Amino acid sequence: MGNSWSRYYSESESRCSDPKYALTKITTHLNSSEHMLFSSNDFDEVKSMVGRVMQPHQLNIVGNNQKLDARMHYIPLGDISMSRLRYSASVEITPGELSSFFLVQMPLSGGASIESGDQCLDSTPNMASVLSPDQHTFMRWNADNDQFMVRISRSLLERTLVGQLGHPLEQPLVFELGFEWQHCQAWRCLMPYLLECTTQVPDILQHKLITNQIEQLISVTLLSTHQHNYSEIPANRRCSIRPRHVRRVQEYLQAHAHEPITVEQLAQIAGVSLRSLYSGFKEFLHISPMQYLRDLRMEHVRTELLAGETPSVTGVALRWGFAHMGRFSAEYKARYGETPSESLKRG
Image 1 (tube, rainbow, N blue to C red):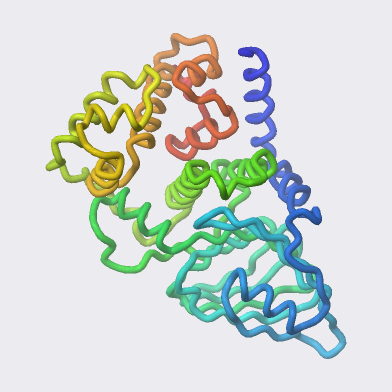
Image 2: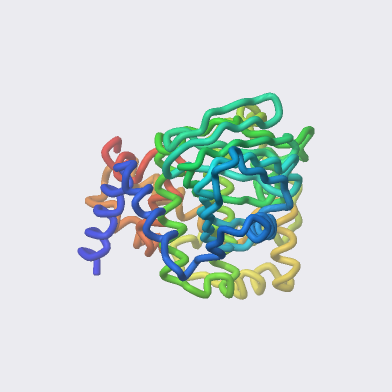
């Protein structure tokens, strides 16, 4: 088992280092009939279908001799969704303010001109755009523009940011419009991983724990890798005045992170219901008890890698309960800004 996981991890990390891998993986996954939302040349149908999964918007074809030949693939994942859209005609799109979501647009080919708030951008396969909810947006997509998009709910990103800062937001979250996503390895590696999850777990929406972890991973990765108006504000320490049952569980997890642990077991230790345990952790630590445990185990992995006393990344990851090497690598990179193997080499 160890050798197979080691090969899987090495191959995954090697593929991720090649920017073309992400483009190939995205194109392959979002090109099948399985995730096809529509294929149409009817203007009203296209506008209605796109508006249904994004939001109602103005759409105009540029030029008298152009006709739509549009198609859209769509994968919902709880508070996020992934889609691929092309119109095969030059179009002007005016969504106005997105209000309830952020949108990361990554051209697979072609380009688009985008105005959002007071920022302007010529978007290409090397330059994605990140639209923020409170910014009025106008776009012109070229006829050859084939766009891969990740829609992230506003509430998810803002909850995650509040958890990082330790206090409420004083102003709306606004990202820098231009995002060189192919130069950002953590984000670039995350995109194929998300698509692989939908292939490996076709009924993924039925597994709330998995979708919650995916939501957290993508929100943390975007906030930590792309510039926004809170990027320069240091995260404050969270409130230290915590309920007794929360402190008790924290202390237990810190002492027993190397052991098999269930959330029911933690509720018994705390002497409270599962609901009270979850609400206490969410209110005072802004994460679930099991995510707190996962964070602790990730810290132990990093400590062992930096100590340089382990022969392999795979062995350490498996010892601390990280069985999916691709996901582990993406989380580690998003959290620490380097791959596990880079940490091992520094040790």
